[in-house]
Image (cartoon, rainbow, N blue to C red; front, side, top):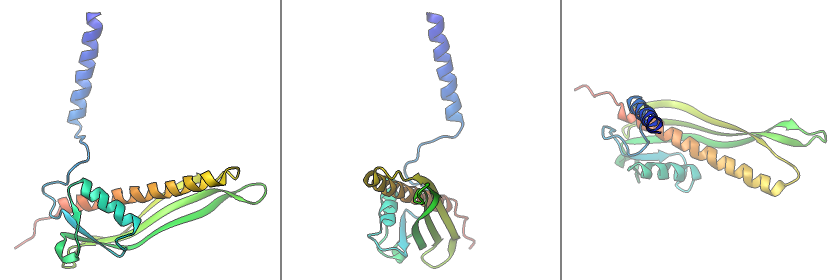
Amino acid sequence: MARRFLARAAVSAILAAMLSACGFHLRGALPDNMIAKTLYIEGLGSGDPFVSEFSQILSYSGGSLAASPSQAGAVIHIVTARKDRRPIGLSKQGRAYLFDLSYRVVYEVTTPQGEILLPRQELELKRDYFNDQTSPLSQTQEESQMQMEMQREAAEILFRRVTYRLSHQPAKKS
């Protein structure tokens, strides 16, 4: 009995040591060396769901959205943010039952002075969606839920890319 306990304790200690050595850490506050904890989003209205998602993620991390580009450490220019739904499968009756859902964001990140930090890039998320014709109401809800999840995931990815770039800003030469 004591042997089994010691073996489990040893395995637990080894696993804990391995996890701490791999560099794993939870997402949390913005890095202290990040030059800007205030960002400005340009190109979408303040009521746009993508801006709301991004703002929420930024505030959870200790940052905030600026009211104007001059008050921000970086400006995110959203060129396009678009949802698409494309049929990719047909039933015997000729009705679409399988769809390709996508959410695409094209963006660029600059300083308030116009210096490019991240050149224009595209971020695209895709999901396959089976639309069962026997319960159309629930399928509509499922589709909108999937679109919202893709929008949130796109905001998280964009946030991580911007945070990484700003925290690894090269030193300016004098």
